[in-house]
Length: 246
Image (tube, rainbow, N blue to C red; front, side, top):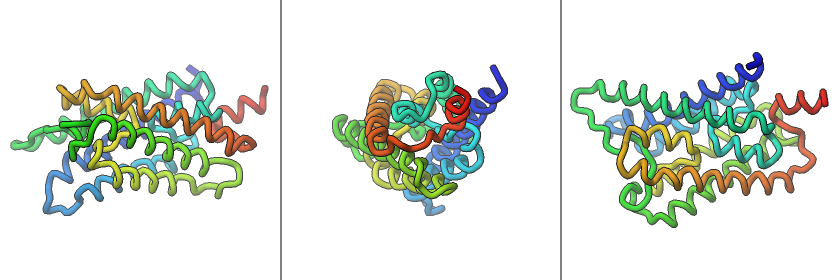
């Protein structure tokens, strides 16, 4: 593995770990104490802030995906080279699982702690407000579509340079404000896989929706992105370098 690719995968690992540990940690630990007043609004901002902070910390190294659906969506839009697709997604999933494992160890250090749903996603009986499978699929599909459109648009030629992390982080916050009651918010298969493995039971059985719906929404956004931003420069710095040397 060459140095650039290793740095890219390391950046994706660190950022995805932070997203799952920080966002799900806010839900599992802080939101479990009503007296702190963080509630689902605080959890929404926690997820947004993890992406915002890591977009500036490592986004210039890896392209700032932190999410298999984002990687596939950017690939669909022509923003991610084929050779990065599977390695990036694999690292993101591994990082999410490790982050969930560490969070479980930390949270279980409280004597009377009960894991419950462990910030996992679900539909039907596992939906926070018991939304149907169809409603949850549609929500995840649409929200991921718009998340990718925001990512593609704000990182395209003509967009304000150096500010993409802010609208992307705020978009993820808004997405959580909308959909925590519906699915507990995924729009990120890695984020769903990690906690589900520790929640167990139905959370694992329902994982398919939180893999399929975000990926489908992301691919559609990539297709639209090619049309809307067909003359835009490629954001993925590795792809830029490859095209310069081709």
